[in-house]
Image (cartoon, rainbow, N blue to C red):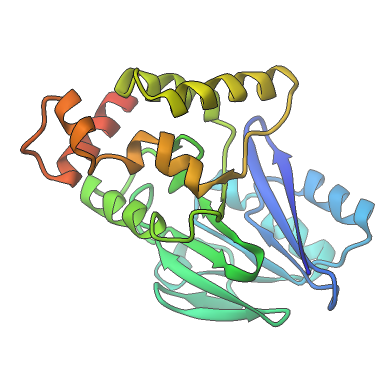
Amino acid sequence: MLTLVTIPCLSDNYAFLLHDDDSGDTALVDAPEAAPILTELDARGWSLSDIWLTHHHWDHVDGVAEVVAKTGAQVIGARADAHRLPDLAGAYEDGDSFMFAGHTVDVMDVSGHTVGHIAFHVPDAGAAFTGDSLMAMGCGRLFEGSPAQMWESLSKLALLPPETLICSGHEYTASNAAFARTIEPDNTALASRAAEIDRLRAKGQATVPSRLSEELNTNPFLRAHLSDLKTALHMKAASDAEVFAEIRHRKDSF
C-alpha cells in the first residue's frame, strides 16, 4: 500500500511524500525547503530513500542538499535538465520508467514552464506529480517553453485516467479559479468548484492535490480544444494550441 502526504513549504509551495507501507521506502517529490520535510519524516518515523525533482527552479530544489545530508536519499531527475539540477543518481527522459519499492514510476516530459520539466506518474498510487506543468485550475507560466510545447504536455497529461490525483507544486488555486471564470462564466462545474475552493481556503486547507476529472471539467488550460470555448473567445477557426496561447496570454496579465 502507498501513502501520499502533502507538505506545505515556503509561502505557497507543496512537496509530497510517497511511502510504501510494505518496504518502508519513502520518496519525496521536490524539496522547496528542508525543515518541514524533515519534520514530517521524523513525525512519521519514515526513512527517505528517494528525491524526485520535477524541474530546476529554486523553489523546488533549494532544500535538496540539506535533505540529502540528513537522509542520504538518492536524487532522480530529468536527463535533459541534469546540468542545472543537484547531482543525480538517476536521470530519465520521456517514456522511461523506473521502479520504486516494487511500483512502476512512469516519466513524462511536460516541457513548457521550463524546458526539461518532467512529471512522475505512479499508477499504483493513482497519482501524477506534475510540478508546475498542470496545476490545480491552471498551468505554469511559460518561462522557457512555447505555447505549443505546453499544450502538447497538457494534452499528454489529460490522457491519464480521470481519477488520477494531480499533485502540483503551488497553492494558486483560488486565483486560478477567479481567472477561469472570466473564460467560462457559464460553466456550472467551475462555479461549484470555485465555491468549494473558497470554503477550503477560508479554513486554511489545501486545495492540492486535485482529481484530473475535476481539471478536465473546470481548468481552461485543458479545455482549449472545445468548440464552445473557442466560440466564446471568438477563435472558432483557431488551432487548439493557438487558443491555449490566448488563454495563457490572458492569465499572464490577469
